[in-house]
Length: 108
Image 1 (tube, rainbow, N blue to C red):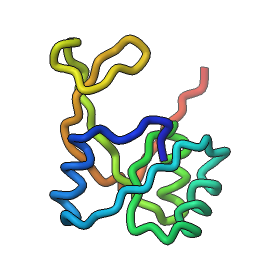
Image 2 (cartoon, rainbow, N blue to C red; image 1 turned 180 degrees about the horizontal axis):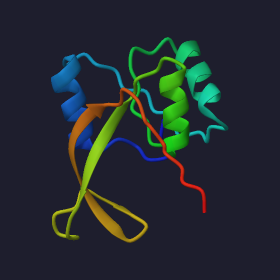
Image 3 (cartoon, one colour; image 1 turned 90 degrees about the horizontal axis):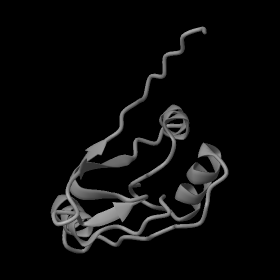
């Protein structure tokens, strides 16, 4: 669930983790909330999910029982980059599974 298509290095890593016959389905359509993501996940009968979303949405996903994968990215120079987002350059490092997110607030 991302507006960005996966990088070749990310596909390669998913195949290493899940096996060469892994099928990656991309859903770049905007989502309205975590419940929308869960609905698409269930309708698609998917085994796992990589998500790029606001932390509040990811927190809600974990509350709904989904533990998505997170693509850890490192900010690098243009020459080292695999992708550019808003004028910043990144390289994929690895996937991590999100077990939960705790958001703490402080009164102003």
